[in-house]
Image (cartoon, rainbow, N blue to C red):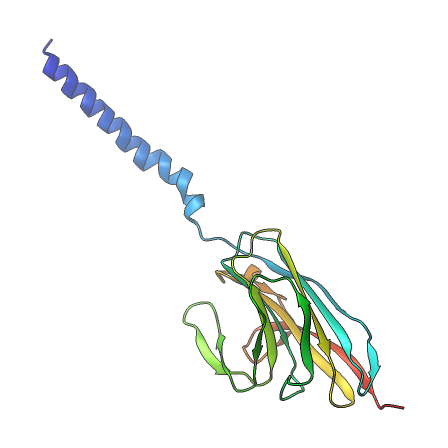
Length: 198
């Protein structure tokens, strides 16, 4: 038998085998690795040092969040204050362990809204504090403690939410239902009673 024909036959057989593996086997093995991660932010604790305070006093607000899904390119925790016009002199950061520094968002600032499809911009109707870690790995937890000193009596309200990116499903937002905020996103609502100083 011609040696050249044998070599050609072996080469063709190897090419056919490679093609079969490349088309039929490898895509199935690599598709899961190519799928985008699905982060799942969860706020595991929201606590206040006092549920009722006197006007002029402060309370400590602690928020802790984790990622129970795949790694997140970025995960944000947002704490908003819908019944004040400014956090100046009202909210200060006591401590936090996030990878990036807190950002104070003022009322009127353009902010993103709608992370699926074309993102839109809206103006913040009230101030908030946003803090994030980028990246935020699966199982990691971070927390922030704020000192809050309300400027008037009554029910002092704050909203808490967490968003994971890529934002590719309902699991990428916490909470999954409840009250909608100025970004048309669900938030959990909390409050502290501020009484007239005796």
